Amino acid sequence: MSTARTLTPTRRLLSTPRTLQLQLQLPRRTFITLPAPPPQTLTASRRLPYLHTQLYDLIADVDSYVTFLPYCQTSRVTHWTTPSSSSPSPSQDPQDPQGPSSRRWPTRADLTAGWGGFQETYTSRLFCVPALGIVEAISGDARTLIPASELRKYGLVDPGPSPSPSPTSSPGSGEDDDGGVFKSLVTRWTVTPASSGRGGVGEESAAGWSDVRLSIRYQFANPLYMAVSAAVADKVAPVMVEAFVERARRILGDPGKGEKKKSAEALR
Image (cartoon, rainbow, N blue to C red; front, side):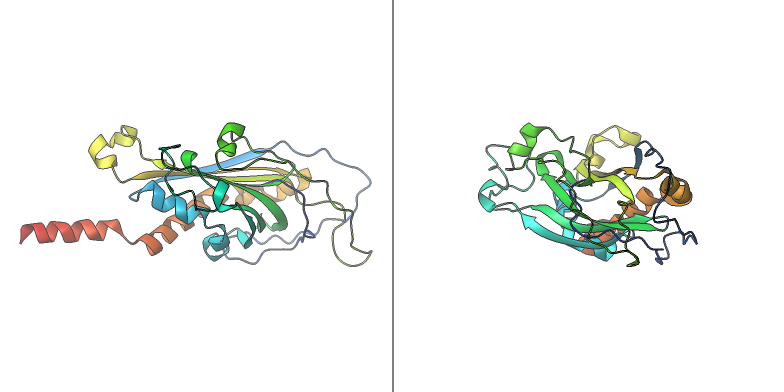
């Protein structure tokens, strides 16, 4: 997720049961500036027995992230698209799962993310592109890889990261004035109709199913952060996807129960 950090980054040990609590204190200043480590990417995916339009609505509800995503400490949408430019009409884009042009989408949010003992709050740029099934949040100095032509359909444009504000913390305040934990952080959810042939699933059984994929691309500002978080990094994406699966079951219900009920009624 990458833009100007308008909120003062906080760095503290996380206490959630899903993260590894690390007893490490890093110096606020160093005499040697270490090069930033290369970007890393974490991924996870699941095939779910729900329509992609239903799942997309859940993913686009950014305000709710804090209620179910284990590595998200805060999520608050601050800006939205205007209804007139939020989405094309069905005739303009038949693949748009949301339809009416009156729908508005979140474009900016305050998100706090962290794992492995670190967390940081960013003002994130959000890109909701229903035709591609993408909901993307960018913070730091990254740019979206969604084609500009697709963004324009929803009245979106990536302005890129804004200049970072000058430090406002005072010596001894306990706030870090040397920059944030993440140089960049890009979280992309993608939900699409399940394609036939994957894992032996046929055309008929794939109907009504969807593929959900989560990609987290991040770059730490300091290689020490990467070394400390290595123990939990690989678990981040799978844990987040499983949390989303549980939310889908809670909100949309268990489709398996419905099928069993239909079968029982058919036997009467």
